[in-house]
Image 1 (spheres, rainbow, N blue to C red):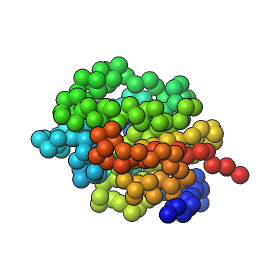
Image 2: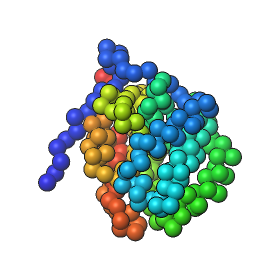
Image 3: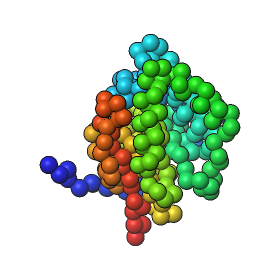
Image 4: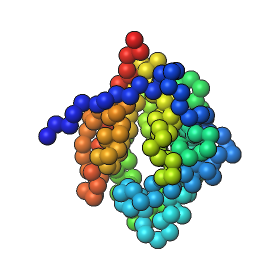
Amino acid sequence: MTPPGPIVRRIDDPDEPGPDVRVAEQRDVPAIAATLTVALADSRWTRWALPDDGRMQRLTRLHELDAAHRGVSTGTAWVTEALDAVAVWEPPAGAAGTRPLADDVRAALARELPYLGGPRARAVADTDAFLTAARPDRPHWWLRHLGVRPSARRKGLAAAVLAPVLVRCDAERTPAAAAVYGWANVRFLRGFGFQVTETARTTDDELPLWVLVREPLSLS
């Protein structure tokens, strides 16, 4: 059955102010890692990608490196003031106001990701390579991490931390894209104008995954 069309939420309406959101700073690194870990502790991806042994410690370190340090070093992580919601993006190369990934973060990721994934590292790396090939072939913003603490959900915080980049994408006529591993996340992102461009499974056939792309919305 074909799913219904998206109910696109406009998130740039000044008459509907949302929670305060700001670009993350170095001092926010521990809280970003903690928020994402609490938000995703029981996700299908976490159970698939990380071994049982020390899973929460591995997940926290992964978020510390690939979300917090990555987002802070590139200037592409947005948080609520209470640090209970986080969105981290990978920007198009050379996007104004962003910075290249810091060399020390890149080196730490290369060094530690195989250890964090343990016996799952090859399947995760192969799936990441597949997703890289499935991404749009033109400059775009790639959503790497999004999470809201369970105690803060259903308050519009995810929309709030997504808004800075999605509004920018509309203004600059740039696509946004993401990959998700659950239909509930597909439905959520479709509410902001994302559309599924590819449906597949992880390279070990364990999990379904969807690639979604959001074309810029008209501002008129």
